[in-house]
Length: 403
Image (cartoon, rainbow, N blue to C red):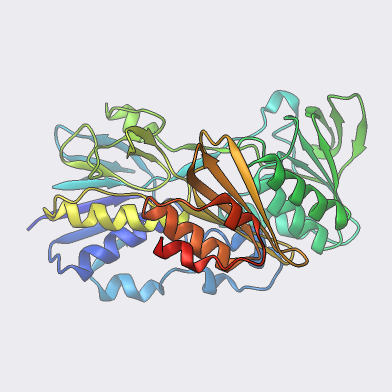
């Protein structure tokens, strides 16, 4: 009987094995995870869970009993040391597990500060998994002093949670503005105002020179502008990298992640990849998406293709971020935009519409689910939107969908 092994028990891995069983796959399934807990949601970790508003068990995507009930061998707290594509086996400690097909859903790894500048001091944290948040939580207390390194969405979300807990927050961003790599100046300005309004000290064009420690624990930071800050904890949000070490050692082709074809197959016909670790064809190029929706949709497509569906994965990118009482929803990819149209709303409601020439390519919607919904449907269908209508807050957006 066919045996499918899945390495990586995150959102993609959990979605893949569940889809296999849903589709009626009757062979063996083994899901291998490095963490000691069953697959769980990551987005709430740095928000509701860190704030103490969500219990650990509520993070779990499914109760642990689900895997036994579905005859899925869930191997937790287990790290694969090697893949042998020729023998079609994976090594797990001293155990060798054979496979007929293998899926890599290994996700991504946070970039860390080098030890040479104090990155190995106690009190320096990244935001990626449950253990990271559990280690950080005791320090996120009223009156503590936090340095956030990086002004992307991870850093800003961490800043928001810390500020809500009464922590004194300083955020440094080496680029000229926060969110510079991922958003227009208009979105950056919106979130800069939001955070400064909550007492966060945002310093743009400023980086970290080194951390200062005492008895092995961080106590301060020296910044590139020469200033020195006393700090009790540091949160590093300087991006993530695809987890490709196993794939590389196995000889698989890499290209900004594990390179796959449109169906999710790697350079080895018996090995597939999905989620943060996988790069795939998209609109004549190749991309890698770091998002929950992509992890789910791509993994489910791969599950179908492992059973012979022959179905191309067609990504419809969307993302979200929660900061204070603002929900940001993003549709599309703003790569190559040359114009941004603002649609104002009331209070903290606004949306920014990105165009390349006359074509709508992305929307950032803050507390405006209607604008997001219309923008997403237009982008997914390849339609555009008249900028004059978009810019008029009194104009109804829905007729754009019928144009």
